[in-house]
Structure formats: C-alpha cells, structure tokens
Image (cartoon, rainbow, N blue to C red):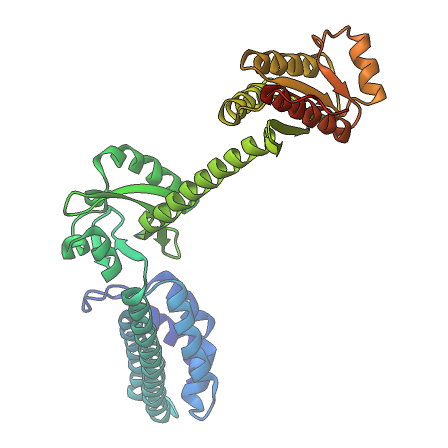
Length: 401
C-alpha cells in the first residue's frame, strides 16, 4: 500500500470531486488542501490503526470547518466520500494481487469507520454544547429588562424579546420591519443610522418610537451588525431602553433644582436687604457685601416698606460690612436717604471709617445733611435719643437734661 500512495491520493481527489451523486456538492479546495497535507497521517492510520493521530486529525478538520463556516453535515459527507476513494484504491490493489492489499483494505475500512465515528462524536459534542449555549442566550434575551430585536440584513424582524414587545405595546413586534416601530418624524434618521452602522459596525443614540396605541416615547438605542467570518452582514440587532423613566426623573430633578434656586434667591434677597427693629421708631439695616445696580432697588424697596409698616422715624444704614465705598455706593446711599425722607423718616449712616470719609470727600459726595457716625453703637444712641425726644415733645413733656 505504501508504494501506491500517489495513486491512492489521485483516486481520493477524483472521487471526492465528483459531486454529481451527492446533493451536498463538491469538496471545497480548502478541504482538498487539508486532505493532501494530512494524507501521510491517513495512510499511517490505515496501516497502524492504534495510532492517536487519527483523532487529532479529525479535531483539526473540525476546527478548519468551523473557521470557514462549513456545514458539519457536509464535512461528514465529504469525509465519507474521501474514504470511498481510499477503499476503491485498496480494493483495486486486492484485485491486482498486491501483497498485503487485503489487510490494507480492512485497515482502511477500520480507519474510515474510526474517523467517521470520531468526527461524529466531536460534531455531536459541539452541537450539544452549542445547544446549551443557545438555551442560555435565549433565556437571557427572554428575561432581559431592555428590548432586544434581531432582524435580517434587510431589517425584517425575526426575533423580539418580551421587553421589546411590551415596549412597543404589541406582540406583533416580533414580526414586520424595524422601521415600522419608529416614529414617522424619525424615519429620515434611519438612513444615517444604517450608514454609520455599516461603516463603524454600530450606532448609538436616541430614537423616537411609536407604540401600537399611538403614544410616542424616546428610547436609548444601540444598533449593531452581526457579521460572518468573511465580513458579510448576517443579522442586524438593536438594544432598546425606554427613556421615559429617566426623563421623568430628570424632569423631577430639574423642577426640584428650580424650586431650590427660587428659595435661595428669595433668601438672598432677604439677606441682601435685612431690616431689623431696634427700638420704637428705630429700624436698622446692616449692609454686607458689594452694592450694585441690582441690589440697590431692593434695599430701597425693603426700607420704604418697613418705614410705612412700622411708622419708624429713623433708619440706621450701617456700611461697616461694605468692602468698597465708591461713587456708585455713595449714590445708592443718597438715593435711599431721599426715598426715606419722602415717607417721613431720617436715615442715619454708620460705619463711616476714616478711609470711607476720605473717599466721600474725594468724590465730593453731597450727603444732604445726613447724620453720619463711625460706629453702629453711636448711630443707635443718636436715633433712639431723637425718637425719645420726639415722643416727649408730642406728649408736651419737658425734655430731660
């Protein structure tokens, strides 16, 4: 048998290439190459059935088949056809009286049976493993909280998990076309999605869908293509998450944030112009921080409201906490004093430090006869004393000495 190896291989090629008698077609050239590369192993196996090379070769053939995406049933048929070529060559050798040919033929039959059985076991084991994986993957898809849709390359849906159907509001979501569930206003977006997905392999973003009851909703979408080993698209998949809960949370967060800002603004307004009753007829307004065009009207508004409500005759404006006194600040104080005079109250300015007094002189600010004091205590004493005097005069009592 060893002397006839070239002849035997030629017969194998001739037999395996004849696909007319088999609906599975001709043996691919890649399989011919694999058979040729391992031909020595085949014949060594035939002449020594105990060798372990046969099983290794069968597993290698299975790996090649999976890498190239061959149908395992076809591989088994091709393997059997190759064995037929080997057997015919051995039987011809027996007819020709070649020494040892009958033994070789029996070994070839044994080797072929062993190869077929080994390949069948490997194929069955892989099939069972694949079935288990498929069962797990299907269970994952069926129980996933997000929508999962799978379609053919043309977009025809072939699978939609329960979450996807519930999201679309119809059990019919498992059929039809992906575009049927997209809001009409978003249809133009689909072409862009397809172009990006084709070029990049995936697309991620937001898309507006339309439920079966006519209610639309926004969704977070991940679309990607599943490709074969040759790079051909064999399926299109989408992962869809209803954005409605997220939008509701975001809306509530935004409303809460706006309410907090409103409350803070109101609190800052109160702090910007605090008005404190010190004694009968005397109010104090301690100012802290910079005075600007926005704050001044509020100061005047609060001051006039307080004077009108309490009937105060004196308002002490303390500027100890104002870091910079310039022309704008001075003008604000003068405006507040004039406004107070119009409703019958006098403004007493306190916190006039040496630097502040110099600034007011340099700016040639006319305070209009406003009482000024360097400390709040002095200003309070002045205002309380004047108010007490006015009350005594109203009662007709003589002033105390």
